Image (cartoon, rainbow, N blue to C red; front, side, top):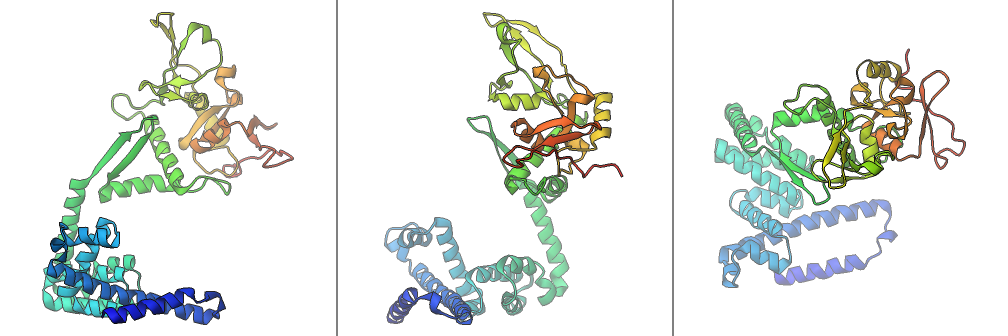
Amino acid sequence: MLEELTQAEAAVADCCDAPAWALPEHDLVAALDAAHRLEQRLAAVKLSLVRELDGRGTAMTQGASSTAVWLRDRLRLGVSAARRLVDLAGVLDTGAPDVRAALASGHISVEQARVIGDTVSTVHTAAGPEAAGKAVGVLVEWAGQFEPTLLRKLGTRILDHVAPEVAEAAARAALEAEARRASQDRHVTLSELPDGRLRLSGSMDAEAAGLLRAAIDPLTAPSGPDDPRSPGQRRHDALADLCRLALRTGELPEHGGDPAQLVVTTSFETLARQLDAGTLDTDLRLTPETVRRLACDAAILPAVLGGAGQTLDVGRQRRLVTGPLRRALILRDRGCAFPGCDRPPRWCDAHHIRHWADGGSTSLTNAVLLCAHHHRHVHRGEWTVRLGGDGRPEFVPPAWLDPDRLPRRNEYHRRT
């Protein structure tokens, strides 16, 4: 075997030096198919060698704690990849020789072989060796049409084909086991980072996952053709939108129901100046830009301190667009007023066209509805917001986007 592998290695080395650009397209495709087929056949040889080395205890003899650890150091693999290699070698050798034969012939890939091996093992447990043998044939045939992910999904219903008399009971048992596992594993972890951000991780059961997707998916679509956010950033912003909506419902327990409250602590001497950087009650600092954006639709409670730091006065909430004024704003704008955005009113903040901290009034003529994404966008200062002659909001783009700076309007919410 070693001599044949050495010859094969030399042939592959020659192929590496051959100019692919010189091949006509049909030969190039045929060469790709041949290389892929050869890769799978070599994988079958490799798995056979791994299985033999594992059976002989070579790893232990050479001082390693397991074959997976020995392979990690010998082949410079990740330990999880090495462990999967040992597991698959064992499955193909003892439980699914026909799968190994399909891999050795190049008819299936390593990942497909892993899927088939896992599925056949499940069938063997549920319906016995005869059904498992039938499953191999069906799955190998399917592997000629479907990639590993879809093959695994189809494999969940393999009992319908090879053992229909036990399929329903097995499927119900598997579903119940999965539900128990999901319920036990469900969790959400919030890890606070040094700069005040949160890292979210966790696992949701099927019901909670369905609820989250139903709520968040409509909000993750790009807000327009020029939306620069990545899918991950859009999901982040959609989750923030959900939190804003929940806070506005008035149905959350204890501290819920109000827009976010931001406590701005300042000295008496700087109180008269424009709103500057802010501090949350967690002692985390916010940039002036973030503070000014939050102040559009948040309850600000200014706390005035004396020279020794004692509290002299805590002011009242003010300048919020609420009640009849917000309803009038909704009737006028019908949703986010930024051009090209289709977000409905419930996802929008009331933005002061001239900021309240700059002397702007809280009135219909100084307010506009903006979704969270476009609220941040406008606060960066490149776009100018104003009301047109008919009282409807219009947005003047920056010169780099439109040298003529022609005003734009939102046409999604126009009255018919």
